[in-house]
Image 1: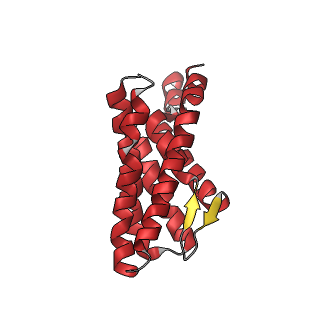
Image 2: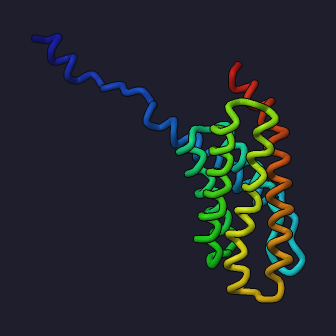
Amino acid sequence: MRKRILARRAPIRRPLSHVRPMLGSAILAALSVLAGLFLTIPYPGGGRFSFGDAFLILGGLLLPWKEALLGAMLGGALLDLLGGSFFYLPWTILAKGALALAAILARKLSHGKGWALPILMLPAPILQAAIYLVPYRLLLEEGALVLFLMDLVQGFGGLALAILAERPLRALRKD
């Protein structure tokens, strides 16, 4: 009888398996926000060049798809909220989600072939910049093309950094 009472009072220990998927998303979002806050170059006429896209692409290349997608959209949204860019918030969620989704699809389609991944990732920065072109045209009729080109530079810069860092980080993950 006493053993049964003690067994009922013992705390139930559950593994943290339900928390682990959220950790990848949270770390990805935090890294992209930190890079967006501290590793930025302001555009002339508004906007900023951010290295946060490199982390979002890396998340798409290294993390499971749900974590990568959630982390990318959350990181972009938090950066816009912290920067006061409330108008761009829905466009950022779409653009960063598309960027991560393109990285996820490129990873799946490349099947680990090193040469195929950069080629399959080429449409990602173009897609992101095209999504941002809509609010640019709504707000600024004259400077929209310049901001579009700057977004292309940012996207391809983040893509280059992510592809350079992907193989060493994947090797660390296997160890």
